[in-house]
Length: 364
Image (tube, rainbow, N blue to C red; front, side, top):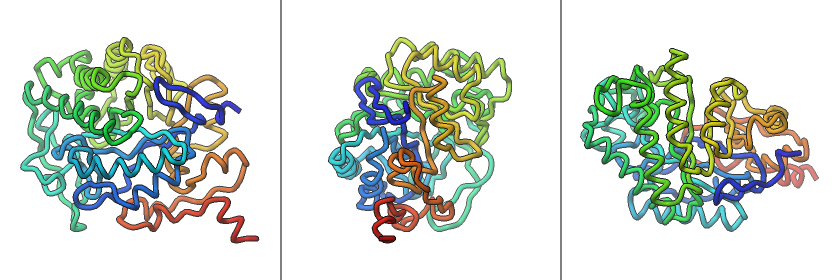
């Protein structure tokens, strides 16, 4: 079965085609430094064909959640080095998702005087603060043209830090309502400079970030995640013609780079929009269809068999099953995820899911 075949995506070697999707878990403490919990969590899942880490902030201003890790300080780099050493010791491949949260934050979370976005438009709703209370999403500072270019350089330094920490590559988070995605939508981006006003201009930031990172660490170690028409956190993409024009511009801008992969989160992977992005970028394609429902082995295998993807990213099954690849290969029962423990600060619901071998040993 193709699902269990190895692959090379640029400089990245996948032992199978099952990719661990980036999953925010908020276990990195007050200062965003990977700790023993993170080391063990990722070590346990090194059997995945490739791990994409949880969204990791490149600069303090881009931190979205209490307990989210960063890759800005020496201590954070050292913490991630412990993670990568553990994963590599188990034969795994791990890339870091670089996630600037943009307007999805709060100064009490980022510990900076402001949060930023493409335009001075607040994300809808509220966010959870470290003390357990909620607060309305604040109106972000609208980045000046020069500050947009500085934000690109923040991503570049973070990518260099990730490589210094032993990561095999990086993924630009261009999805799910965070900064790069905010630039893509005419609802969250109402700029009139070169970064707004048309699909081509709104696509510019995503292209510049990815291009600059590729120049810094090598395109064969760089991927990008996109989520066209996800319509989340106030980043709305509802005009089909505009969506097609915007993502065609992104794909055409990325095509010359020779990226390691493009990773698309979309309920309908077979759609013309998604497959057009895939063909245009021309890079190995990771599909993540897990919108409302959990991705199953049969669905993952079908996507590959029908040549709609080169690998499949899975989230919740990887949370609950550190040995997911073995279980799928053996058609074994799966642990059930415990959503109430997805976000927390302890090992519970994080590193305490049993492996198949442990369950069999207990039953013997």
